[in-house]
Image (cartoon, rainbow, N blue to C red; front, side):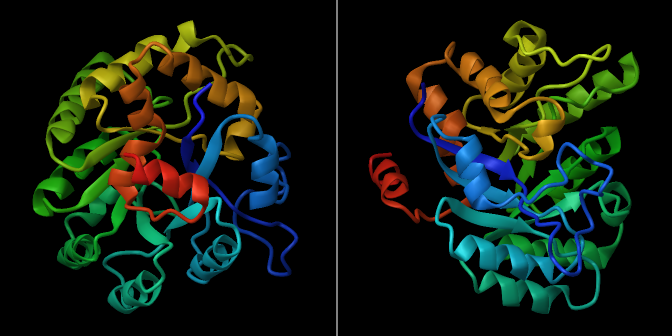
Length: 297
C-alpha cells in the first residue's frame, strides 16, 4: 500500500447549516450527509491518505470563507479550490481578499452553476481576470468535461500561457460519437503538450447496466489512455468524495487507482499520489508527515 497519498478532490459541506446548502439536494440520499474532515479521516483510515484538497461545490461567494474556516482547523486539508467568477464585477477584489489566505489554492471554471467556459473565453473581462489568477500563482480547475470545455481549455491556455490548469473528471467522460472522440483526443494531446496542465484521475468508477464494476480491468483502457496522453508528470489522484459514494465506498474507489498504480514505477506512483499535486497546487505542508515527504522530495 502506498503510504503517502494526497487526495486532490474532496468536497466539504454540511446540510445542517441554518441556511442549508445548494448542493447536494435532499433527494441525493447517498451523499446528503455532513461531509466534514473528521468523517473524511474516518472513511480513509488505513489508505495512506495524509492530506486532501477541498474543491468548492457551492456557487455562494460566502462559502469560500466557510470552507476556509473549516480547513483552518483541520490540517489534514491542505487548502481549497474555491469559487470566484472571472469576468464579473468585484472579481479582482475578491481574488485579492481570498488570496491573502495561503490555503486558497485556486478556483473552478467550467460547466457548473450555469456557467460555460466555451462561451466565457470570448469575454475580454473573463480573460483579463484569468490573467490576474495566473499572476497570483493560483490554479484553475475545470469542471465537468465535454468536448467544448476541452477545446476552450486549450484556447484559454494559449491566451494565458502562464496559467496552471487541472482538468477534472476525465475518466467518466465519454464523447458521444467517433468524430467527437477523435477531436477531443486531439485537443487533449495539444493541451497536454502545454506546460503546467494536469489531468486529475477522478470520477473513475461508473455505473453500467445497473451495476458499478470494481475490477481494474474494466477501467484499464481509459486510465492507460489518459496516462499516455498526459504522462507520469501530469496526473493527479482525486477521489471526488463524498460524491464518489454514489458509485462505491471510498475503499473501492481508491482500490482501483491503487491497483493501477502498482503497475508503475515507485517514482511514477509518488508522482500520481502526491508529487504532481505539489506542482499543480503549490500547497504547503501543515502536518509533520506532509513536511517530511516534501523535505525528502
